[in-house]
Amino acid sequence: MKDQQKKLFQYTSMAGAVLGSAAAEGQISYTDIPDTTVDTHKGVYNLDLDQDGNMDFRITQYLDTGTTGLVDAIFIAPYDSINGRAMGELQNGFSYPFNLIPGDSIGIDELWNGNTDVKVGYLVYQYDGTPYPNSNWKGPVTDGFMGLQIRKSDGFHFGWVRLNIAADNRSFTVKDFAYNSSANEGMLAAEPTLSAAEFMLENFVIGQEGMSLFLEKPATTEEVNVRVMNLEGKVLVESPWSDVRMQLDVPIEQTGVILVEFEYRGLRLTKKVLLIES
Ligand SMILES: [Ca+2]
Ligand SMILES: [Ca+2]
Image 1 (cartoon, rainbow, N blue to C red):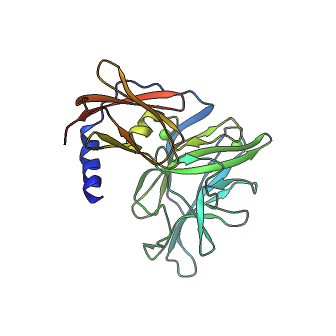
Image 2: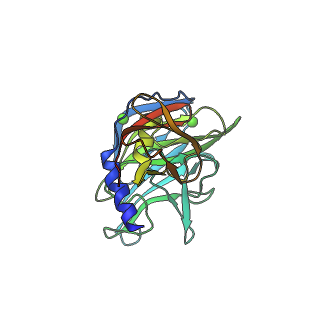
Image 3: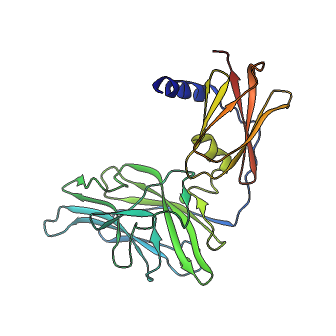
């Protein structure tokens, strides 16, 4: 298994030419703002995720506070309703929003304990300069994505906000945000600022063992259709791919460069792979 892992990594670095892709157009509403840094005690950024004029979340910086004056913290809370939620988990009764990477799913099936009705979400909480270990947003963070959920009259809407956190956890910067205007429909962290094809490239792994390809994708990725072709475009193997891992056997006479095409969420992406006899 260790050998195979090694091969997977070697092979991934060899694969990788994108021959063509086209991103699917969803109902994603994206808002870029002038990057806004908050670096004062009780300084806030009020986030209007869906740009309807009603603020949805408040992110607050605390500095040199607490009874000792040694606490710094960054919190997120719903602005004025009990319904706003950040993706995250409860630890020891405290809420910790997740720090997502591009391509992570943001939808109803995820954990939404990044804050509660009554508890703020702790991005960072540090005492005398040492952050608590459960904080997922300990600085420095560059381009971290926080999954968000708001409730509107037609249902839940999902979105994200992109943040940087300073290395000393004493300031944060809000860069941009997006949300899905289709109710109850999930989206991906960073969508639509990177194409879904780019998410796939980052997250799919192609490995080889003999004349078999080993494909690996994140558990959150739904079914992908896979086609293996030669350079003339002749289809050698085609298969749906649901599980995290799949093995695909390539006809033995085929060596050299092959094309592995992934079709996912209405878009298509092709990787060029050098198939070598072993
Ligand atoms: Ca709003
Ligand atoms: Ca910006």
